[in-house]
Amino acid sequence: MAGAPNVRLSLSNRAENVLLVRQALSGLAEAVGLDPIALNDVSTAVTEACNNVVLHAYGGGEGPLEVELTATASGLDATVRDHGVGIKPGVAIAEELSGGIGLPVIQALSDSVTFGEPAGGGTEVEMHFEAPSSEPVPQDGGEDGAELEAIDHGFPGDVTLLTVGPTVVARGVVPRVLSTLAARAYFSTDRISDTQLLADALVAHADDASSAVHLSVGVSVEPRHLEIRVGPLRAGRARALFADASMDGLGPVLERLTDGHEVSPAGSAEVLDLKLAQRG
Image (tube, rainbow, N blue to C red; front, side, top):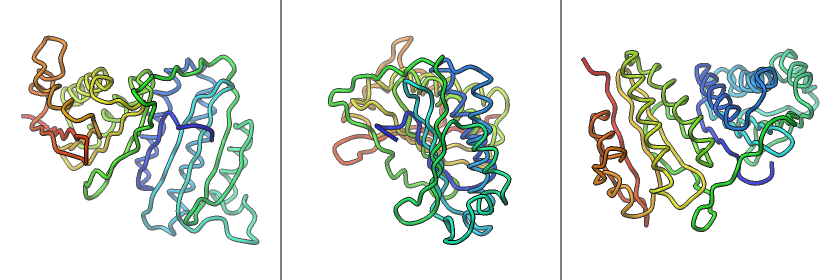
């Protein structure tokens, strides 16, 4: 896949995480104006590839599920990757993927599909979907054009790592993913709405805090609690966001919607840590 993907998700292969992939895909589709019928085909094929990782990649155990989504001039590219048992030599791919059910679906709905083995083993499924009516994503210009890689967020347990950009894509993806995780944390409807408002505010101010094209977000989910880590951000910018007390600044939003926040160093940059809890 050429260039940096617009969306990169690093998840565990738990079945519930497939919904996060679908939500991210919907956000990207909105950004590029993908036709709903085309989105349904893409979503179904990508879901089948993810379900294979859930069901077969780790022999019933748990392991990484990595998904990359990229809007191109001709449509949309999707890569689904695991580091599990991989495609065994001498075993037909049709038998290896979803018991022979998933592969025909992926082949029928994608315009091209290739299978490979990533570094370290496993299976990588690359799909391309023609969507000439979709709009190419404009590239935000960071100071050096660098891609922001996902940092080690240091959370235990079920962690979602999301790297997304440019801003026009992040606006559609980040609120959807965080709202879904808030529902998973058993937040009330009002608190899920708060989480979406917080996500909207973070994306709106991301350009002020980061010189990179992509934004990296890590989320840890526990019952009635979310921990969100955003970064790396430019040194001094995260603290400046807190200090901005203007009506449209991020500071008042953080004070009102979060249950704790702090800025910590990450090398020469900063990381913004946010805590949300169910209230009442």
